[in-house]
Picture 1 (cartoon, rainbow, N blue to C red):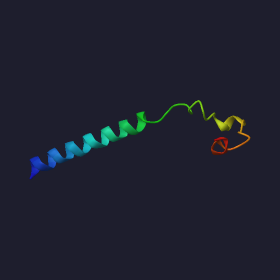
Picture 2 (cartoon, helix red, strand yellow):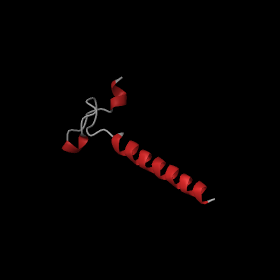
Picture 3 (cartoon, one colour):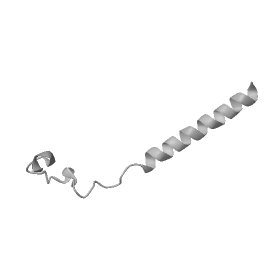
Picture 4 (spheres, rainbow, N blue to C red):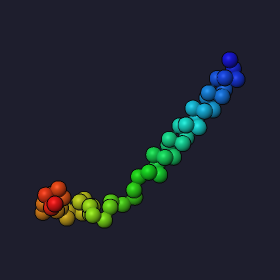
Length: 52
């Protein structure tokens, strides 16, 4: 039973580490060029969906 629990804990730890790395590296550092940062006060005059 002990070797099984040890292998299971190593597997769970590896999954957690891989998940955290994926979560940290999967986020863009800047907004896409088509959507400027609105926190600068430059709000669009119309919603993007209305521009179709």
